[in-house]
View 1: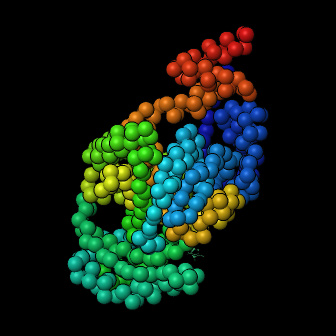
View 2 (view 1 turned 90 degrees about the vertical axis):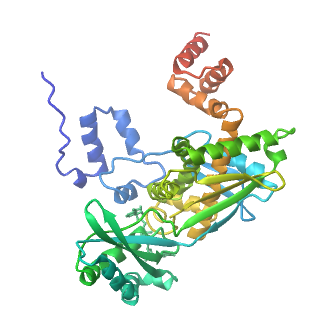
Length: 429
Ligand code: NAD
């Protein structure tokens, strides 16, 4: 019989129950009963809640949640919940935290909890004069924005300022209004989007133009989280090797600062730590990632989010600055029970504290990665866990995993074919 082509136009899929959707997907993709059963196991997220958080739910995707130790942020010891599938990420934070613990850990700050919403107006005949007409109506704008969110207003947040840019584009001159809003303990996307939408008809009225987009900017450069730490030579090098480690890290930073190819990987490492905490606390990883990378390119060339220099005493000083739009309210933060537990573990009672701790984690992650890269190379630290993953991929179970992994590391070749051979030898024996 000829194969009938599979059809992705599944009528009413969104109206089905998760079980009906699983059965439908199983038919389409040829999933066996065991796979469907695994999808149905939603772990620590209630199936009904999952079904309300996003559309067309068929299951949940569990990834490991680890806790990093040794971190001291602004004089306070803190445990860091981290959700990630990548090995060495949690260990990197523990190691960096340990090596600066005695010298005070991390000091941090946040520039504010301000978010920006953009309103795009096109076809404005007199953009420069229209810009002034908008700026002149600051009080009216405040009234519209604050009227949208009495809860936020009651908590001391709300409209703070308006800025207007005349932007030359391929499609002609555009007038871009920025609403600057203090969103307090919320990440604030919904809050500022509502304000932008509400204000849009007034912008059309004042400018004579047509408004298209009304949406927050993820380049949250009014919400910059900063962290700093000093690593002493004896803590990072031991036995007089501190200078070489320090100089290797500074050189690695200089490489990233000068080269986008290196900076992309450098910043990816930072985001290994940042995104793991953002995800663990139910925050929006894509929002934070977009902000970080846009900020890294703000001067026209993509560069490093961290900086390293040598203190007057010869120690290593590291710092980081990046947008950190995270909240304790809204999105999945309040709804996902594990996110709530993670917020308890990290002990953040304000969005500001959470943002500051995450900046420290980003710097910690980067320090460890650069230290490994500038000394033994990244693979040595990776190997033990990576070898276990390869052992499992080769079919090792239970105690075999550790034995195969150890054999791979000893042989210095962590490859699946070698793992299969070792497993065969083990089982044969
Ligand atoms: P939200 O609207 O669910 O919650 C914020 C609201 O909670 C505030 O407007 C306020 O009325 C209320 N609130 C109660 N207590 C508060 C407190 N202590 N501080 C501040 N507000 C308090 O969520 P949100 O933070 O506005 O939006 C976040 C969600 O928006 C995330 O899920 C994100 O993924 C999503 N989102 C993101 C983008 C983007 O990043 N481009 C775009 C659209 C939506």
